Length: 487
Image (tube, rainbow, N blue to C red; front, side, top):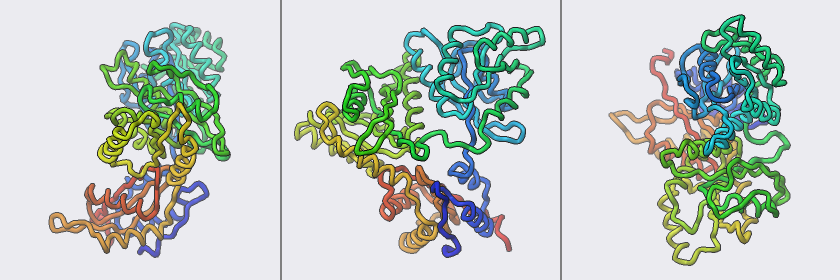
């Protein structure tokens, strides 16, 4: 059967249409339940959904509108501002077209502690979206905060649909008309609570969203690769950015947390132009402190989502903390290529270097595949090693294994290291394919459940055989449904 599966893949490094059809046909012949597999392959490169961000100041009815769009109560709604904190994504459909809706926290001005955090959260929601619904309370009219959001939307340059919410009857439509003054075009008079006018607004949303799904993070063809600098506060992210830039691009201070908003900089390094994103440090979760630390974490997570490579800075002069591990896990779970940079290396004595190596062996054993560089942002030590490490991680991130070669490799594993017998049964891998890259995603079809230890063994062997240095691997296993086999 392995010989029947051929390598293909289009120029974007995803599963080609002919190979996709052949793979699905073989899977049907083998009697698999393909519901989940089709979803995995869709997510892996066959049609990521367009993204619609719903933004506005607090208590204008964003979550109520999201629930109306979805046709069900998903988002938490309460009659007070600030209920929504996280950016939450939902899948929606209108007039036969599917898209993602992202509910965001309210944008507020002049609120000590979290104003920049909430602003950054909304900003990244907008940047990651293909179109934006800007919700304004028509009964209140345009406020100074609304005007600030308008400036943000103009800078982002994304298509905007203006939603004049809380228009519960014809008498309130005059209030909606006043919102023409915002300069965003026609305000759609809507009652998110009762559903009035939402159909016309959604028709406008479909016109604003792209027909063909668009990739919302990473580099476009010919564009610079995006590198996110992440880590705890005061590990030297801004200093590193200034050093690679060769000038003072961002503010550096001894006080932890100087950087509040992610800073994008185009920097030429190693003969290549990169887009470096300096981020705020992720702090400990100390009672969320009015949400500031919580939003800082969201802000950096959003920067990682937009990036292709996450360079995690670790202060080598201090012990590797749970915080460091959490930040690394965030980058891995986001599916980004990964480089670990141990900063302040010039301050280490022999004893500290010895103990650091022991800490790396015990605390970071799960990411041994990530390239490592020992640097000093202050002196510039080993900065020339940063680009080769980034390029190595990107190469692993974009590696594709031909399906025929993958199945030959899987056949050798099944023959030499079969799955342990459990309950009198011995599950085996029947065939598989690489469903996508960036990061590499594999779908394995098996005759039974594969234990977590065996999956880790498969991942380790994949890395030994094909490299994949600097990238997480995503492996999905689909079990044959016996009732689906043809007799």
